[in-house]
Amino acid sequence: QVQLVESGGGLVQAGGSLRLSCAASGIIASIDAMGWFRQAPGKQRELVADISTGGDTKYVDSVKGRFTISRGNAKDTVYLQMDSLKPEDTAVYYCRGVVRIPSSTFNVWGRGTQVTVSS
Image 1 (cartoon, rainbow, N blue to C red):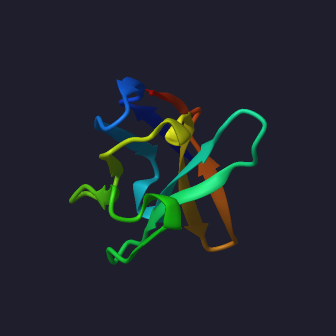
Image 2 (cartoon, rainbow, N blue to C red):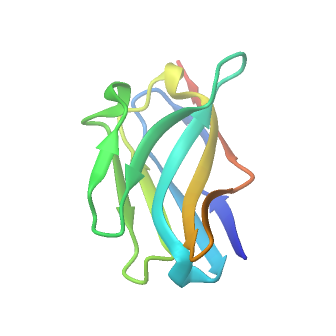
């Protein structure tokens, strides 16, 4: 089993920064890609950024140049550095890990952390 716990959310003014962290526990070796999703009120959950075990990254266009995803050396932690935050970045941010075991591949989700950007 794998569990993910997010931290680092909060309230910040537009133009400010926050750093989100997601720590994995359990069978760490089974975790493949990790990423961050967000869901704003009344909207669908969307991918914000994703990082592979090899360090390849991808971002949604709206955060390119402002957000940076990274992984810890032990591959059991993923970070999201968010700079130049905008009110439209307000959402609950969820950590997602792709777990690969011999019999299947599935997603594991954290419970989410609230990010609120005031104008």
